[in-house]
Amino acid sequence: MDGVVERKLIWNEVLGRTYSLYAEHFATFLKIAFLPAVIAWVWRYGYAAAFRQAVASGWLDRRNFPTMTALGLMQGSVYWIISAFFLAAVAAQVLCEPGDQSSLSDAFTVARDRMGAVLGVTLLAWLLFYVGRTISAIAIAELFRGSVLFRNYWATTITFSIPLLLIAGLLSRFGLAIPALMTQPELRVTQALKESMALTESWEPFFMMFLAKSAVLAYAGYWAANFLLDQLWFHRFLTRATYPWAQSMLYIAIAMVVETPLFISFCVLYRDLQATEENALSAPAIG
Image (cartoon, rainbow, N blue to C red; front, side, top):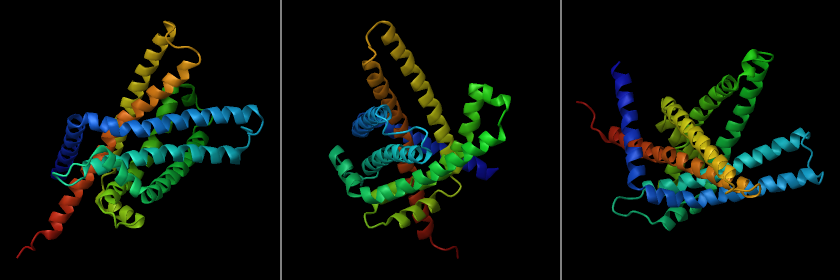
């Protein structure tokens, strides 16, 4: 029982420090999020336009499963890379030395300098997530084939989301590798992953809780965004041409705002767990 209480207390401390830091430096984190958001928006809009053109011209066949799978892998990997670059910039900002708060440009410079290593961590995590997501979706579809469960939107959404949450929670143990790479320039990808896995042992429930909370907040944000867009459409402030642009901008802005606390928590957790481990190693032996 004492272990459970202590774990909950640690969770509360990490959450408290995370949101305190987010609120205190909200403007800075918003500026950091701006560049990844613009890149994600350009990619989203450009990919959609190119995809429609390829289908219309007959160059791309939606029924070609290998090609569509490759495109799905590529599209998802780009979003993960953008998010990883965002996390790296946040880590460079949060984990700088006391009294030597890095500027916004320095945060991106450090992230860019270690981009190769960040890419290695990101692509491995994305590939594992993609494979896990595909296998779980096929397994659920086969298990509940013909079930009345799939006639209900919410039941279907929850059924498919639970395995994704479990997979994402497990893969979040890789998340501390990027803060490690930002603070230790000599670290290799394999070393960063090993350090992250060692530090985050038994922290999977925390990551799942945070991801579930973020998903709920994102859904609420998307609902509010759609309501706002519908009102603007109804009052003719948006046209058929401008609606997709506005929707993409709002969706990506919501994603970045929701992602920021998660990334800050990775940095706070990395700092706290590393400090705890260093204190434990440096403590004198009893007797």
